[in-house]
Image 1 (cartoon, rainbow, N blue to C red):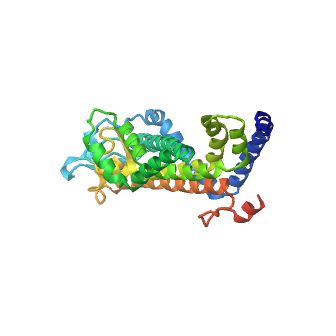
Image 2 (cartoon, rainbow, N blue to C red):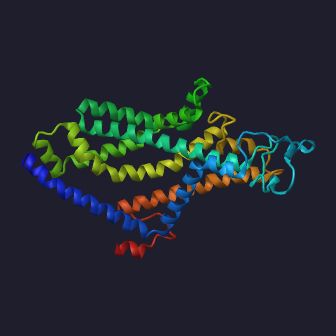
Image 3 (cartoon, rainbow, N blue to C red):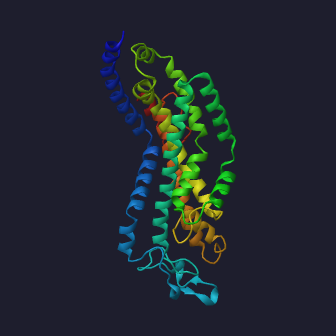
Length: 328
C-alpha cells in the first residue's frame, strides 16, 4: 500500500476526472435556461472587454461633457426624444452633463463585472485556505479558525464595507478597494463549506492511503483534497458573483463605492434617482443592465450547481429539461 498504491490509482483518478467533466457538460447542456444564461453572461463579458472598441465605433467616450445636448432651461433634460438617442449617441445622453449613455453603460459593465469577479476570487482563496487549514490542523487551530469564521459570518457586510470604504484615502484606486473590501469581509460561508467538505474527504480510502504512504499534509491537500473540493467551491463561487455585483452597486449607490468620473451601474443609479420622471431612460438603462446580469448569473450558478450535483434538483421551473436530466 504505499507509493505504489497511490500511483496505480492516479490514472484511474485522471480518467474519472475526464469522465466527470464530460458528464458535467452533458448535464449542463440539458438545461436550456442555464445555456441561455451562459450566452448572456458571455455577451456581457465580451461587451465589457470590448468597451473601448465599441465606444470608438460610436465615436464617443464616457467622460466628455456635451452641454449643447441638454436643455438648461428645463434643468438639464436631454434635448430630443428618448434622451437624445440618435446616430451620434446610440442610447442618448445623461441629464445635466450630456455624457454619452452607451459609453458609460459599457464601461460601467467593466467596473461592475470586474469588481464582482475580483471580490469572488479573493473570497474563494481566503475561504478555501482557511477551511482546509482548519480541517487539517490541530484541535486548537481548528477551534481558532472556526471561531474567526463565525465572527466573519456574523459581521454585517454592508455596515463594515461602508465603514472601511469611508476611512480609506480617496487616492486609492476605488474599484480595487471595493473588490478587496467585499472579498476580505465575506469569505466566511465558503470557509465553512470548505471545512465541512474537507472533513468528509479526510475519511476516504484514497486520502488514508496517501497519508500512510508518507505524503505531507500540504501534498495531500493539493493532490487529493482540492480536486474533491472543486465542485462545491465552483458552485458557491458561481452564486457569489451576482451577490457581489449587487453589493458593489449598493455601495456605489450609497456614495462610498466607485467615484466619478469612473462609470459604474450603481453610481449611475445614484445620479438617476431624481430623473426617473423627466428622463426615465437614465434610470431604466443601468437598472435593466444590472437586473439582466444578476438574473443571468443566478440562473447560470443554479445550472452549474445542478450539473455538478445531479442529486440536487434545480430550483428553476422553466427550461431545465428535467426528463433529459434524468436520462443523462
